[in-house]
Length: 263
Length: 317
Image 1 (spheres, one colour):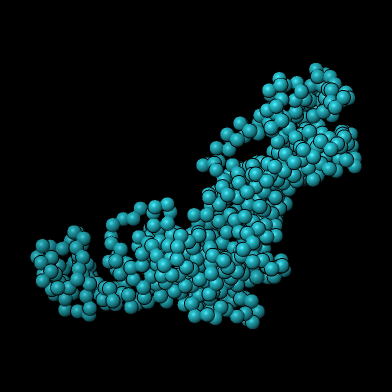
Image 2 (tube, chains in turn blue, purple; image 1 turned 180 degrees about the horizontal axis):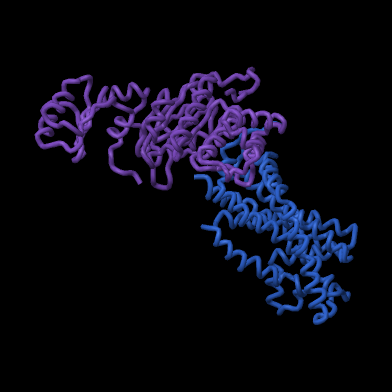
């Protein structure tokens, strides 16, 4: 492979990805516990505790149990969390405290490759979590296959989108405490109002319109469609919307990191 | 004590100048950190950049290793342009940054292996190279230790080992021994001297004059982004200070007047007089005989005298 200096993004970004994988593998036994236990806890709490109160849910013209309504949404939320928290807190620690990026930038790696490697790693964390959660949720019979396998590329797409957004915030926050702002103003509202725990149709009209702007709404909706095996063309718009976030925030993340690191 | 620099068939860069900087300029908004300086480091030599805090040393070498973009001028490393050929240049240099950038998530050996991947060095070769370098840096007994368990000196040696993983033609060191105890400093110096003998070129910054005198073939002293002097350490001392220095603690007014009358260059620090002189034993004898019995000493002039004379004695913070 010939790499000229003019290509700022080459396959070398995989070297950064490999570094993170190596560190992950050192503690995988601990790392895989949260995505394994989290859906279990939610399914028990909401399935056993709440479903008696909620009963069945109207979804796409059919009645489904409350647990099977929230199960795919948990995957959507997990895709968002894993990549967003990786490229915010974890990447920030590597960049700011550990000077890992500084060391990388003294090698043939470019800044673009370092940031790309980090975002792709964030998406990989989303993918790993999705696989583990799929195993648990399938065990309860809430995922229909083979359509369910579409959750895997969805994890990568959502992971890149939320990973890029996270990396953008890493480029602009003054210190690590400041991540509280995007978490409480952006991530937490999405967790609650993106059709995760109740259909957005339950919201007043204006709030429904607002919820449609949230990327997690579309990620959750796609996760549900893939889990139930209800594939239709209008989903292309939702995929396009997630792509749009990636296309906007990926270069923006690189721009902000460049301004932050390259002095 | 052999860091296994390849298999002996390796050829170093053979051009005359390994680094050529012309009118190198770096601005941060309105602040000019490096003010159109020009210097050339010859292939095979150790070239030093000295200066007080904030003089522009680190900014200069950061431009050389392609970390900071230049605001103006031109910069060639291995006769390649840093703007267009940065990737080729960076694959042939080794850098020891000032701040510790070792990977705390990895062990000693993993630090080198992961770093080798950034240079696309195959895994098997990387392992061999890494163990050789850790041997050379006397870290072979700590291969699997987490970085956090290492002492300051060991961490520095590991950073140095890491910077050699790609068999660099040019080693760039930003204050390689700052904060180390004397034993560790000497160990680093010995290793650097061993590397020099094998033909590696070095570009380094330091504010330890002893270090510069010992390691550098040639050096520049910079301040406020400008080069004050350039030359070999010995020549600079001879040129700017002379051979000897007499230091007088708590000089009397009589002694001050006497020194003034001798026409020797001197500095008056209030509680201390510093007189620069050639081989004039008689001056020293006269001072000790007629003016002060104690608190007066004559010593060889050092690079530190040159440095303080040129950059002044006020604190830089």
